[in-house]
Length: 472
Image (cartoon, rainbow, N blue to C red):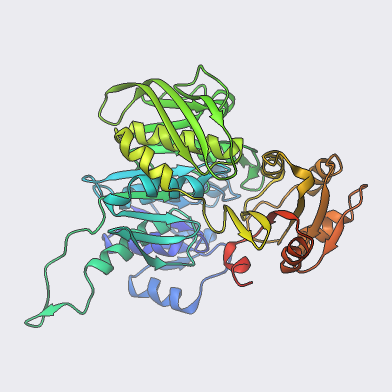
């Protein structure tokens, strides 16, 4: 069989090389023409042929086409290049599951997808599993925790499925550095440092997770040249052994899914398997009483009960993330004490949602490359005393595949009764669409200075990668 790996931009090189190492006949299609010389050399070393889709006409027999789920080509359009071949199609996610078959059978594995809340959920679960030295892939990097200490395996790494394999490889190299030689030969393999793994993915999961967590479909959006959607891509979460899914998203998009172990959570719906029966909000520590029943676990048990947690969750959307994390933990049969302690230790994430005090000003930051109108609404609504705050909104373009709906956001901002500041390229564009008054400040650090100088609090909502904001 020939393996055709499409898209070298989003992890295809790693997938092609991994398959070639396993003795497969592999061809690579650089559909976006982004291959770097070092990547071309790597493919050459492992006998991976770089071809075009037109070259399918030269092949015979069976082919397995591996492409990202957001590829704007249908299976039929690919088949048109050679209708005589016997085709099998896999997503990049499914290919990674095959490549990693048998890996991690002795550890807890969690995969997380959704529109909002993925990274926050990763790091809440990290706190819960910290004594199990979790291996992590998130939008903040590939990380390993050993005895509570963070080890950065790679900082600038995307959450494409291929980077699950790269994260596993980086952890292996850490435990087995090439310099360890005895008598001219490599030493025997060292045991894994980690005993749990948490992987974040933007458009679905590979299916290797013992539990797959779908945080929400806060906004569905088109992908693959409008031939598919985010909700359809994220349905891959149901390939996991056990699933924790927001009930509202499940009811709207996945009610026809046939899966034996789906558990739902909800902030408002007490018909969910897990829900919040009472919430006392605070900007510092929110108290959440949670009830659950009929939760199906990875060990085929059924769990019922109640748990009270206290953690950093200043708004309803943060509490929803907490509920998903608690449900995931219960699916893994993690004891209440570990869940409670872990969430107590969670203080938000620098570069996502966090609170700080500078001089006399409370600064609440919501920094995220995937911020959308719904997220901005929820962030504004979590502030009770909005008159004490400047609300600052802005961001950068080109940081995710899907840009923000500025018309929808402008309509919402026109309804706000607060002191509004717009900043950055996104803020400048929005300022041209508003009917209300707003202050435009080009450089975002000046928004902080303005709040501090005027003894005002600041809600800073910025659509960006934190690596840029952290340079201030």
